[in-house]
Image (cartoon, rainbow, N blue to C red; front, side, top):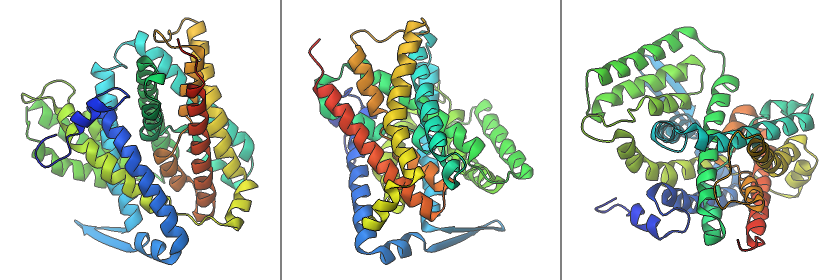
Length: 396
């Protein structure tokens, strides 16, 4: 980036993980995200009334006869987070067309690992909450937070083999895709067919513009907003519109430029440094006192989330990886050993952004607070265990 903007690319080359812009943004964004989370917790515990008043303040908007009655927090969750999921959609499209997911032989093992890391945490959560009020939150411990996970590997530097970092990034992207499908299928409201048909018509219109060779990005702003409105009114969660737009973006040169790379270059810093931290600031603020901790310690929701993240993720990712390699469905990257796989499986248990997002969709206020305590506890434990695993790693 040039001019008055931060030169993320230059910073990225100096960072240990991979030395590219994508990872540098994730690592630096993890720092900002951590600061926003701490600020949310301090604010909610020092001035709870002020915190609730700011984020629950109604911010109504009328668009073409549609009344959008949303609070400030809902505008962030439904509106700004659509940009976050748009960036995720761009990353998935790029990886499938030109990246690690293009070659089935290379992608097979991290894909298998990601599936194992999604299924087992959900199963453990359901077993812990079977028949209870919190069973609907089974998907909360499924997601890996790529920013925090990459940040942990960055701190470990050369102790983590480079191929293992690529393995984690591929796994996390597949993990994001799985979370998107879960949100769309299981955490959407009553679907209204006419609005879905309108959304499909907008998608056809965008494809038509691309077929006609319309290259200026400004021509797609109105269709993008229209798609968001249609999806928001359809009952499917509005952020799915962001994913759809990302997947619709041309992966090949279009209009004489690489569209995906250009959009990621512009939007990824905004997503990592502003949107996701703002989402954390609006959602991570819970009251933590003796009563809350006692409730959490005996709550199936909290325990289910912690067990899912710490045990489910590590066993699911490592077990699926070893099984896939043993069955010949894929092979471990060169130089990666058993202890490395266990370490990266523990890192995958750091769940935050998408886990918070799903918790907000699945639970009311009481269970949401218990889920957040579980997410924070499970993520910290996973990070510490992964760090210890790599620090104890013997030289190759």
